[in-house]
Length: 407
Image (cartoon, rainbow, N blue to C red; front, side):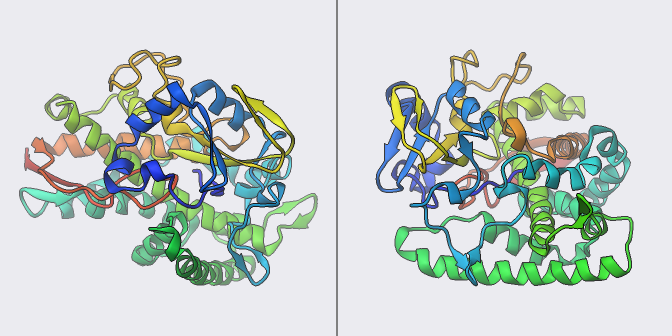
């Protein structure tokens, strides 16, 4: 799971249109070759595009911090005098980041995640029983790719899955970017309002779990201690928000992006006949259409990247979506190769902030796609105008219709 502080809260001009954010890869290619480290004065940010440079940034927390306080000229929205940014391990550097991550780490270890597979398969079956009841066409995002991961993370947290429409509203708001610079103030006010709603919701649940613990993650968070001291309330709320939002956004877009990849490469028949999607293919989706395209960092000292000198206190945007297409690392990087090996993509990040929920997202995508193709035939994506998720770092589509026959 990965939600990153957005140092550049507005799209680069090159990605400001619907078409460009649906397919940013030509711009990435141009920038990798001609301006691999580029300063954008409109956003007051440095954009970095090549694999080696992006990996270096994500792996060096001492020089490239996640804490906006390291960039004094960066202005983030405020809420009652505090940073509105999620107050959890997202905006903490090691060692505090590691201490907070350890609170929930056991629940996301591969062995713990594998034990969830039967339940995830059951939830997948229930969703498909309902979604495929109307023969012929569904909205994959609305009826399947969104509900499944939010049901899973809601059960793990211990929140009512019946409130998933509210969870989606909150999640969409926290990852969104304003549609244009002029709308920024109203946009920030709405984000603050929803953030306050979400914080109040979780604070109430935390109070209840401190008095009456259950076998769920909110209870774990509510009763956790670091060095014998309870977590501060903002850290408890931040962890809950992080898990809920990142626990559904990443997997939703992984599933939808996978279907786009398969449709573009005439792979639907291959997987309906097999009734399974191979693991290397899911890894290739994570490389080729990464659900998270960019992460922001803040320089703590003067640093040189490529041929550019960057001063301390600057915003640096590491474009993972570009790094994952870099031919220097991936032969024919702009081609979808279902059985690509090796495939050292950074679709889930790298370093200390590597996505906590990567094993869960992989398992959910594996079960979801295999169960889906096990039931369908003659799958196609009809001609439609796709709308990209309006976020400066999350990559996906708001809706994806598919047509099919059942088997």
